[in-house]
Length: 203
Image (tube, rainbow, N blue to C red; front, side, top):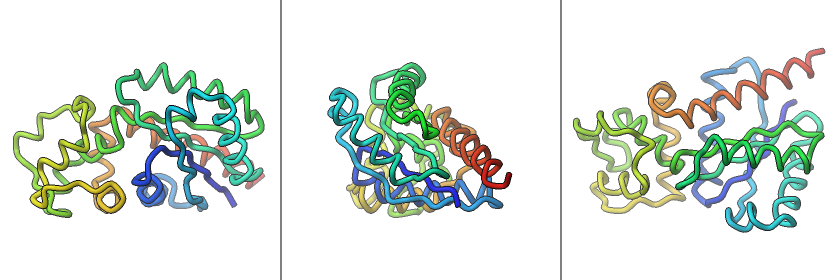
């Protein structure tokens, strides 16, 4: 059995990412079962800037995933370049846990950018109202993607721990894939590592 141990930076992602990954699994690799473990939450700045924190959490993720598993690091890019920052993190991770496959995805700019990419499919979900003019919005442009979502919710509030998993369960994956480069990166990392490990298991 393949296991996935994820490292995330927010309580919302702890709840939402397993929901999203299980949906991606059904969409892209339904023939392969992956045990998506409860994510490990880190403080992003400490995780990236304190070597002992980075090493400790990477080794914990490696132990949780096991010999037939892989590690996914999912962080918000914020103002960093997802490509260059992600490459740096991947190199550091490989040095700490060379015995585990590691995928690194930086949501550009925030996890909620993926909801913006699939906003049309979320109309009416959790008080969210899609506006026709939103179709021209670059989903990875808004600096405050959470605020963008909140402004379109009649409740007037966006709550990460409940809304993030709720939207992850309902968003159209193909819409997000088509409109968000960082979401495509997540799907690519999922398929690449899952298929590689499945081939090893089946040998």
